[in-house]
Image 1: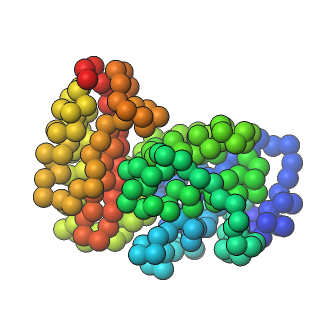
Image 2: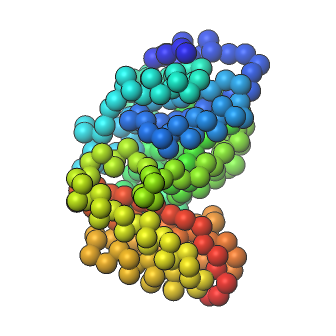
Length: 268
């Protein structure tokens, strides 16, 4: 396994092999492992990027305390057969102050974008840069960050980036909690409270009208600091008959948690 820190060294990582990339901010867990396994199944050469992107953190967010577990991350990558790990500094990714960034459009101002106004501009800008630096055939992203996944898919289409975005189902703990690097912030009591989130998704998915789906999910979140409980279509437009997506965001203590699931809408 090669570990590279500069775009120059990364550029030497060339060849005709089919290539996949998994982009992370480190603090790798079993959810990231699922992404890497999906890449290994599909591609000959797998690159994992580990970069805590300052551009996607707001002024009052957790950039400085975001968990960093470099040795464990590298051990996981090696164990799973990763070919290259790209661990750049901010100066290597942003070689100068960005004069041009990626505008996430209207969807980037809703849901997570309403709570974190600069977040998706930072996400799309760094994903765009890393796609150009790693030159993959496939890029793997988890469904847990569903709005992010949707925006990345749109960016790849709208900017004619020659890569296929592969969605990987949300990885969950045995009790149903979605795996997240931020789960380490939760106290045992808060983690127990967070289990209301998978219960909310299960309750919502048992209903079939958007208002009923949202009400059933919200009832399970009673007592938590809930930001939103919404039903959208698979592209995150207004709900319509057929497949849909239930998305929730709550704050447990100081930790913001998001999750989502597929739903079937049979009445409006």
